[in-house]
Length: 187
Image (cartoon, rainbow, N blue to C red; front, top):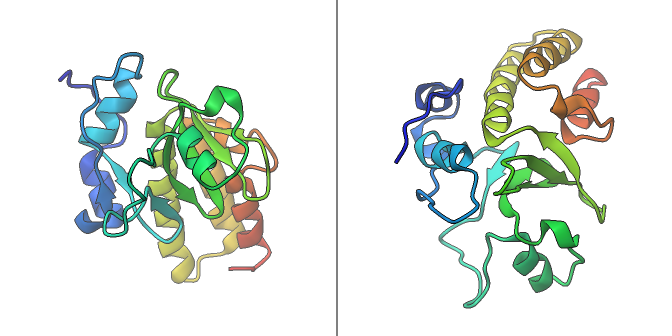
């Protein structure tokens, strides 16, 4: 296993979400899998919360023979069309109402918005996704402490955008939609 330095650490993720809310992936040496993504998922992990539901509940497994990780198998199981280029992508979880997937070859993260037959780029890599989720957890805490929603939205966009501008590139990205709801008091 190659040790890689990440901007997001295990400690930051644990402080934001607690140890019980982190999902680790097994170390993968799958041919063609982006090594940085594989290392991040196994060493740092993904949070599990109301905003981001990581993967599926192991207590409620899928039917025998279903590969619940790859999108093609998952979409076929539910009778949904899956874009050909994304059939081998890995499901990471759900961000609000968007299915979040990782292209294991490039390491890029994509969102499949609910009700859409396509996908949009969401993060340059899985580390950027987790960085945004850690910052979003801080936003949630501050929102609960009555910090001005517009101030929270601006801070989130500035902080996350400085790390990776991809989350805000598409006006229909889940991040933009959620911040718009925050600003309009829908939370």
